[in-house]
Image (cartoon, rainbow, N blue to C red):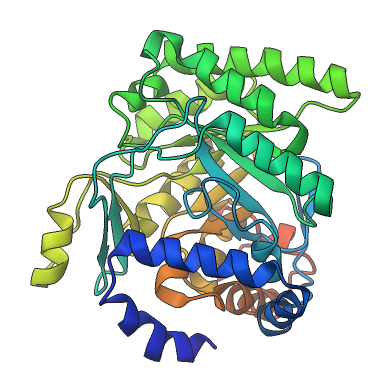
Length: 378
């Protein structure tokens, strides 16, 4: 199916607006996964048992590969993603208030560079509607068979000095359904949001989330949920280390590296250059090396003691393996699914297991951060 998608699916995308293609794919997956025979077919085609289990923040994952935020903002295709073999699903970004996002067109595809540029602007249905959809799903079908992550964003209408209440309100509404929360302070498409990566803003958000997290945990008789921070690849290494120290000392449980970038790589292809000239954050292959280098920097700085998630340019098992060896326990993809199709999960899990056999690691966790150790092997 991977070859079929590359030969037929990817060329077909060239004739479609990027956002419309995304929407059609999401609606199609939701429709297919709503019918049991179709779900079984999807599982038969794309799902496979994996021996690459890992533990992250106290939860066991069938393998390290999951869906990044942005693909299913409003939790519309919840039954579809596990059928495609993903080991966890991140919805959102979800903001307190419903918002339409920025004017269209706002998503652009650079096919030769295998990159996307978007300025979506946290378009989503808001925390109340997403919570209602999750509650309906739980009542009808029960919890997801894989961990559900929630990406928390700030509403555009909320002033920066009140941002912590926006994040905390969404966390409270979605707390019963989430396994992990990701505090997104790094989207380039909400005005001034990245200022919240600075000390004062980040500390206020993490403290507000900590209070809500513990309150909900006490109310439900459960443990508090892990909270991760997602940062931008445009930080310098010095800035990144400072954010890490601030986040760790204020209760964050790990970090997602990294969000989209405002930087643009050189290109000689005119069609790609037109996409690169658009305003917004870039994801895909051009982000890969910087995102992986950020994992290396944080892994070294924390001596491998802080859980990391790698995202950015993951479109093959080699990409995932590189991020794992750099120090990521889990990896995610978004643009990779656009350019490689739904068979990406199967190809990555098979490839990781092959790498484990070749290197002699008995568990995938043994490979995490291995490039920093004397026993690290390629």
